[in-house]
Structure formats: structure tokens, C-alpha cells
Amino acid sequence: MASAVSYCLLVAGLSVGVVLGELRDQFNLSGLITALHGSTFGIGLLVIGVIGVGLVDRTGRRTVMTGAAVAITIGVVMFCTGSVWPVTLAGTALSGLGGALFVMIMPGLISDHHGENRAAAFAAANSVPGVAAVIFSLAIGAALTAQWSWRPVYLALTAITIIALGLVARPVHVPEPSRHGTFSLHHFRDRQRVLIPWLFIVNAVLTEFSVGIWSTAYLKEVGGASSGLAPVLAATFGVMMFSSRLILPATQRLFGEATIAVSFVAVGVGATTMCFGPGLAVKVLGLAITAFGGGPLYPLTVDRLYRRAESSVDSTSLGAIGALASGAAVTIGPLTLGVLADTFGLRWAILFIPALCILGAVTQRPHLKRW
Image (cartoon, rainbow, N blue to C red; front, side, top):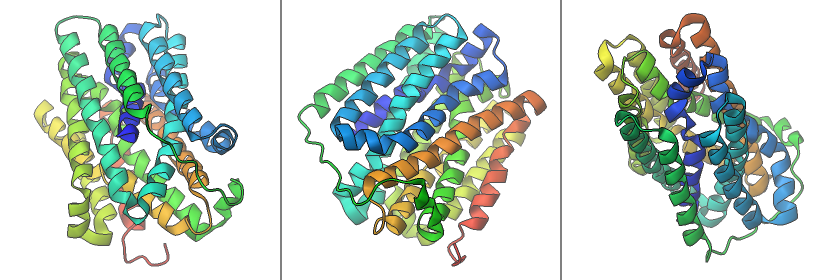
């Protein structure tokens, strides 16, 4: 429960995507600056991926998790109260660092506790934030529809989440990880057990996170939704991702080792529908297909990293390796879409996602034994 609520606080830090369209209009932001607000989380992941293990070793998991919660909260306050884009960007950078710490620590915690059942447990803990994302989208959308400011609503929801986390996590004992050896980038020399699974995580996060960050702006600018309706419709992304991760065990029983490849195909179909589908309703349907297909990608690719490398790399170091993968993807993905949007328009920029899906489906087919 504490892990799930922690991820909900992470949602508060990442829900900037819900209001990027408003921020873009208010400050007259370019696609690049707009995307930077979504990519600061990725930059934080890159930083934490390098220094995070040392922080955990020196202060312990619980202290680091507490610091992460505080950083996210302060970052959201800066984002919501900033009157110029450098302040809002600094806020997303701070909350991004806090969120990166959560992303680094949580998979190792869950893996240490659940062992071989980590994939289902990780997917379950990751499904709950989908509900939080929907609540954020609906509440902010309702405020905009009523022509209220989104800022007090965003702050209130974040306050509720941090209070809930304090109540749930306070009595919880956080086990410290067993350590063997030290974290080093030399781990990436192990091609089969570390590098290839790491690249697969990068591909997975590039595919689903980029769409999530840009979904509200896409439905507003390309789909023609109003400022109030766009974040409400974009909540479809959270609902479908929540549903997809909730039924992941059943999905794995149905598709087996082909689950990841099938997920990539589904995301590609959804993103293509978003681009070429006529009308707002069809574009929302494409977003739903994209989110439902993308739900299994992150937990399953992280699980594969742990399965392959757990005999040689400790869980904290694996968390850092996973954070570096997410960081690379979260930094590159929204920025790439932003640059493509400035160059070709946001509608055509989304075709970047089907291209990634083709790469993922081909390289992660289960019969390619060399991978």
C-alpha cells in the first residue's frame, strides 16, 4: 500500500502533462520548452541512476524515500505558483528528482519482497497510480470547464496525496537491501544480462510515456477538444493503463512470451489511429488502445531485467540501472515529440510512436533466441 501511494504521489509530479496545453497558451511556449517540462523527470532519472545507489547506501531506503516525497511536494508547489516558465520548469525538475528516487527504489523493494512474483506485484502497484491520474485529469478538467484556475485544484490533490502517504507509510518497516559489490556503469558490459534488457526498457518507456505526456495537448490541438474537455478525455489513458496492468496475469496466460510483442503491436495500432482517425472520438479511441496496449510494457521489461541479472547484480543497483533506462527514455521521448511537433506539426509527430513499436515488436519477438 505504501508503494502504491508513493506512486500516486509520483503521479502528482508527472501530471504536468494534463496542463501543458494551458501552460503552452499562457506563456506562449514552443514545443521544445513545453516538452522540457515533461522531460525533467527523465533528466532526474539519469542523475539518480548514477548517484542514487550511493544515497541509499549512506542514508538508507526510508530516508531517501522521505526526501523524495518532500522534493515532489515542493516541486509541485513551485510549478503551480510559478508566474514565469523558468520557475515552473524548475518545479518540474525538483519533482522529477523526487520521482526518480521513487522509480529507483520501488522495483528493488518489490522484488526483494515478492521474488519470482515480482512482475504481477509490480504491475499491481503500478496500476493504482492510474486511478490517481484519472482523478487529477477529471478534477483539473472540471475546474477548467467551470473557468476556474487549475492551480488550486492541482495543489489540493497533491496535499491530499502527501497526507495519505504519511498516514500509510509511517508505521511501515522499510527493509534495507542486501548489497554485494558496488554499483558501476561497468555492469553494462554484460550484454545478455544487463545491456539488452536495459535497451528493451528504454524502448518500452519511450513508447508509452511519450504519448501519456502529450495526450492532453494532442486532443486539444489535433482533436479539437476544448481546454476543459481535453484533460477529461485524456484521463482515458490512465483508465486503460490501470485496467491493462490489473489484468496482466491473465494477459500473460493468454499470450505467454509473446505478450510484450503483442503490446507493441497494439500501441502502434492505437497511435496510428490517433494520427489518421477522423474526429475527436476516434482519436480518443486510438488513445485508449495505445494505453491499454502499453500497460504491460514497463512492468514486463523491468521484470526481465531482474530475472536475467539478479544472480550477479543486487536489487539496489538493478534499480539504478532501471532508472537510467527510464531516464533516457523519458528525456528523449517527449523532447523528440516536441521537436517533431515544431517541425512537422503535432499530428504527424505522433507517428514517431508506431516506428518505435515496429522496432520493439521485431526485436522482442519470443523466438529471437539471440536476444
